[in-house]
Image (cartoon, rainbow, N blue to C red; front, top):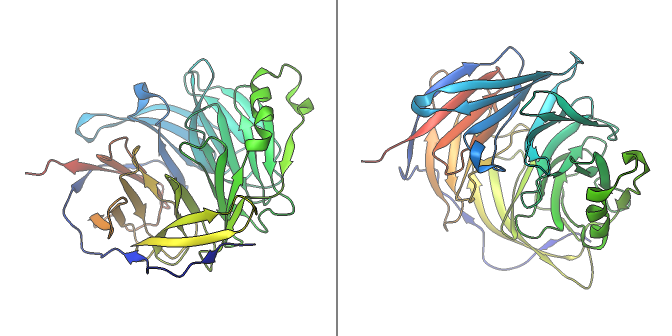
Length: 371
């Protein structure tokens, strides 16, 4: 069933010698609170707000703006009514009328859709049977979000109508917590998910797309919507031998990482006639030393030119993605940055890198003009 390795050329492994292609320096460090920060994400949905980002930690969602000269301004803060909630993930989405939404989820398994203009809850989505590990937005239809859960399922939601459209789970689904999920950048029907069963699964929504369209015009109660189960992925890959905690599409290729100090770039070769089958071509590996604990996620700039990833020692590695062999753009270290970095966020053009840490700090690094 799962993708087998094909005989072919060996994967190309990047060297850990920084190329000095771009240099970054720390321009700000904020202590947001005592609780760990698990996620940080720039708004790539709306060009008016490319310099706006959100973080989550404890029961709080905070929205900031990156200004000139390293300044970080607090714009908004939403505190969940349940003080025991612990948010693990956040994404930007938008209403059909263009209002920006921040969508957060975590321990309680509830997706909170917060209107970023009013700081009020727009909707809450209940459905997952356990905590939510990641939420991602469909870039071509940003009122669609997908959530990955400890309950072994992935769910597709419409933030405009509050409908759970599809549930990716069942006979061919994940057999343990789902840790990460991502929409394909151009093929609207495709998502990839990965998790604690050590697999990456590719799913297609093509035959269910009428339900996606129906979710935008549904006027009855959301609970009456005919939510469909997608039980079988079109492809299953066993690339890693441990938890897979982050996967992102790079065109038709996939970047994924486990707890073994590297990001892997590979190509799924799906056989159309036999779903689930096919082969895997491992193309490149991007080493990340001391990245051997789970729940560390990498991020990319808007055009996927580079990826930034933190490690458990508080260091950041910035890799050029689309060169072969991979080029290490920069290794970012600071004497005071020693806490595990759970997630990074690269700005639209990659000139700013943010990291959020286990000790509740946010760090801002800005590219230095090269002489």
